[in-house]
Length: 345
Image (tube, rainbow, N blue to C red; front, side, top):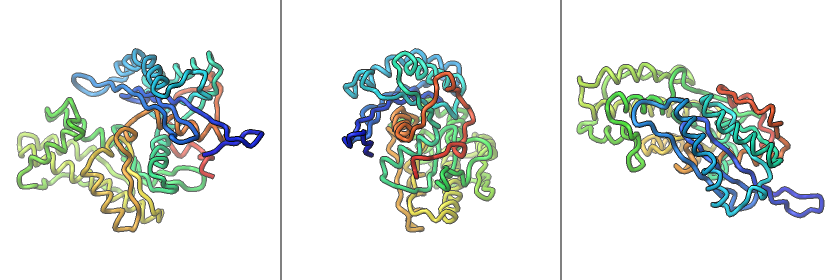
């Protein structure tokens, strides 16, 4: 990406991005020359037991954000004066967590006189995938702890072609792991504990659990309830194996329908759950059957991170999208369809 000044020379632009929508506080720095990503520092809140409490996570973010910003600037070998603008994820996400990032971004913008850029968290996951894959018009399978969507670009907006009707896929496997006594931690050596447990299934026995696909949408609530009821009645390895196979097959089916409907020739898997080798293999095979290229975003950029906010902020900034700090409100349910994607034109 080259942004030219009045004299025709290439103008270097650097944007600092802040991510704080859920369990991760992240700060990234992106620029319009290669390498595009200069820094991607983060710290994750992980409770000793139970799920994520927004209040506790926000306290963690507030304590860490100053040091994370310093680390990002040091990693990029920059000072705050070298930054042209600051971008922040204003939603969707957990209210208390979002407020930490928004407060920090407003402060930096106001104190240092930097333009402020509002970024939709889900769109940032898509755009970092586009950058890393080199794809221009993919079908996006966005899977995380709080999101499960099939998304594609159409008429200046990213449109949702399918999504969960209740809980997200990441929430499904995390909740099951916690209730089954497998977690925390949820990830061991890069693998989710439920997938590791599934590998202990000797016969690869597929239990009779709900497979709920409704048109382009999925529903995981019934699958979670039924799986939990199987604990103690069936071998835990078989329960985990069935949970993984059924839940991943459901999202692969609706992704295939989305691909057939949109006729895209590229598929991106992004979000925290994209680290799953099992899900990656299913989607890769499905894409190949339709003659589509497939790309799974690397773990460092697939989960929540500041680099994706910085990069999306850069795309917006060069197209004139900025906001007054006093108007930088968070939006916990900010959907991707609400954002006009002017930079894709």
